[in-house]
Length: 378
Image (cartoon, rainbow, N blue to C red; front, side, top):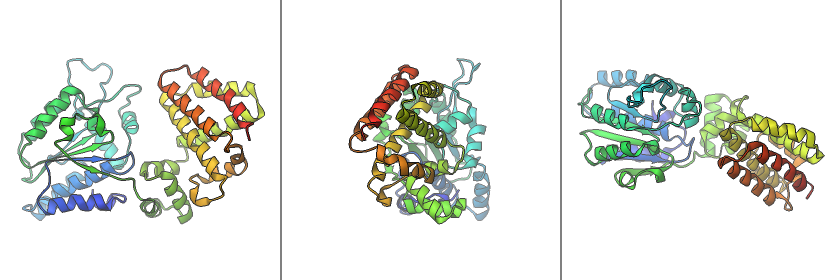
């Protein structure tokens, strides 16, 4: 993978290259930033650079071989660490390592360098299991990095979501960072650095990755996805700096379409005070898992804000899809100064209650009843 495949992030790219060229590359780097900003894409591109162009004494043949191995993410000097689950039936004595899901990991990487933890959990068939990086992985990483570089250049260790390490693993990784093997570069890809041990954070050079510029997302949608200019600009603005959000807008079957339908249904039934059908609506959304319910409520919260802003008649302030904007033309007047704060607070309370394992049917039916009252304040 090359830097040209990374969307935007020119500043971070130049910083990484400059450190390498000036021979002041730290042994441990931590790329921090929001989901969809391209942290993993940068890590993969930089690792590929170090293992090919970053090897000053390597021959053209070695570079071609390295490029061929990297195309399948099977380079012997590139080591991945990522959170995994413990599949049902696995012996409790077995210490899980990232290699236990190596095939699934490489398959996901070949699909593209932009993905979420939820997508990785789906790839592992995790169901409701939580993924973590355990002490077995730190032991395995120590073993691998103690070996000499097979190509005579760098050894690169990419650690995806290091905040998912358990305490035992984190402490062993700390020792590796304190006494790093020769010619080894650690690249951590982190979304919640505050969850890492302070002693680990103090031993890495942090590089904050910003959201992707809207213009870079627009260009990528046009060049990579063949989207027309107007649609690409609309999607890029809605993506709010996340390539993952931009991709989700292109997926006709993505959750947002379902959530939009549920939002429209809720508002129409609440306006008509149709208690009978609101009860059916409640039973429907109560069947979703809690994480999906929270995503839906977060989507509702965004649409409420967008409909309120729509009333100002300034297109530059509106971040909605064409479908959402079509609905807003007639609905936005019902979200105004009299109720926008209360509706927003109501949805935020629902998210909090669902997070605290409140009964979904009670939470959502209460939402329906209160929405009836709030919508008449127009």
